[in-house]
Length: 454
Image (cartoon, rainbow, N blue to C red; front, side, top):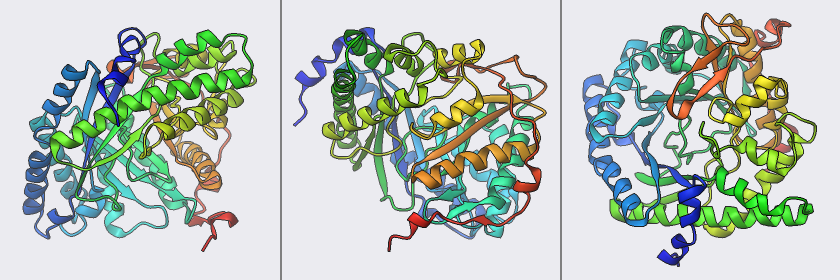
C-alpha cells in the first residue's frame, strides 16, 4: 500500500534534484467513433476526447498541489488515426481534418500535446495508409499540439522497407513544411520498431489496439535524483553502483505509482502502467549525460559509454519493477540530444557522433532521438538511418525509434533553437556515402530466426 509517508521521503528529490512526474497521459479508444461520414466521425472524435479528458488537467493540478509532486504535462493518446479514418478518408486532406479535430479538442481540454496521428505498418501498407502518410507533413504544419508516429517494423514480422523509404521522404517534407519554425514539425514525428501500446511519452504515444476503452499511463522522470545519489558512490565498485541506482529507481517509481493510481481514481479510468524512463530536460541537473559522467566518463561517447548506459538502463528497470506491478511503456534511460544539455555539450566537444549514439541505442530506451541533421540530407540517407535503427530493435526484440530533424537551410555546426522541453540541437553530420540502391530495393526485410516461437 502506498501512503503519504513514502512521498515525504522524496521531498528533497522534488525540491533540489528535479524529480517530477513528466506526464499523465490518458489513452482513449476511438473505435466506436468510426463512421463512413467524415464530418460525423470527426464530431464523434471531438466529443469523446472532451468527454473523457475534460477533467484531466485539473486532476493533474490537484494531485500536484495535494502531494507537492510536480506534474509537468497532461496529455492524450488516441487509437491510431490511420485506422480510425480508414472508413471515411479518401484523400490526404480528409485525414488532415482529423488532425485539426485533435488540435481543437486538445485546446479545449487544455493538454499541451495529443498523440495518435499514427499508423501501424510493420508488415505492409494499405492504400488508405499510403494516403495517411502523405498527410503527415501538412497535418503537423497546421497544428501545434498534434504528434505523429509510424511503426514500420517488429521482431515478429520484420521491417517494412517500403514504409522506411517513404518515411525518409515524409521526414524531409515535414521539416520543409515547418520551415520558419526551426523545422519543429519533424520534432513531433517518430518512426518506431516494436512500438508499445502503452507509451505515455510524446511524440510517440498512441492508444494501442490491445488497450481498453480508456486508461491512465504515467511517465515519471528523475535523472537528477539518480545523479545526486551516485555522488555518494564515487570510487565504489560496480556492485555498490548498481545497488544505488536500483534503490533510487525504486523510490522514483513509487512516486509515479501514487500519482497514477490517484489520477485513475479521480477520473474513474483504469490505471495502466508507470513508465520509469529517465527523461532529461535542457535544465542543468536534469541530464542522463551527467549520470554517465558521474559513473566515470569524461563525456558521453568516450570508450565505455555503451557499457555504462547498459548498466544504468538495467538497474533502473530492476528497481522499477519492484516498485510497481505495472511497469510498461519504454522504461529506461532516454538519450535525446536536444533535450539534454550534457548530450549537447558532448556533441559540441566532438565526443559524441551519430554512429556512437546508434550503438548506445542497443542498450537504452527508444533510439536516435531529437537529432538535428543538415537540411540537404538526401531522403535515401534518412531512410538508411531509420533502417539501421529499426534493425537494432528487430534483432534485439526491443523498442527503437528515430526522431530526426532535418534543419532546413542549415549545415553541420549550426544550431536549431526550439525552446521549452525541446531545447536546442547542434546540427550533426550524416555519413554521405550513398545507401540509395539498398533502401530503394523495396519489399520487406524478414523477421530474425529467433522470432519463430509458436
